[in-house]
Length: 229
Image: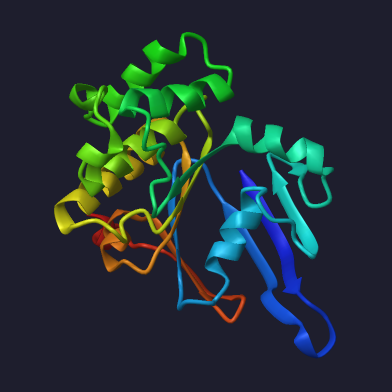
């Protein structure tokens, strides 16, 4: 689904140059949960941002279903992000003045989903929050906010879900609930799910673990049958 080849990302120039990514090559498959792990500053968030069309690579290739996105005109990227991706962030990024249903409905409207209010309720039901549809974020727990964020990310049926530290601010019970939802979306719905994380709890729900260090892929391995069981 995603093929990244020799992706480089640099900032600055001369003595001030920073090499955020140093030739990363990676394939992402549908129906799998992939964890990107590594120390702070290793390049994980830069990589996921490039894969999702939020940042442009300095050089290299990123193909989604065979379509090259490196070098796309700036005007083409919003439609790409809207049609293919769902984004989930550590900070939830919900609109505080809107209810849970309204937060999801707004994204449905942006993605031109028919009957956005009805679809918002369906998505909240999918993440177990139909009874919180009229609740504002200030009255939701951290885990509930993240589930609203997942429902919002699913507007428009995106094929690829990118999650940046989705469990970092959650307790163990809420974190596991979120991970169960994300892994279910991969295995039952065929989504490609990529999770940037420092959280060892995530590994239990992943098919594959990619370690990033100093802007390079240090290791890339699938979990064994015994580990998954």
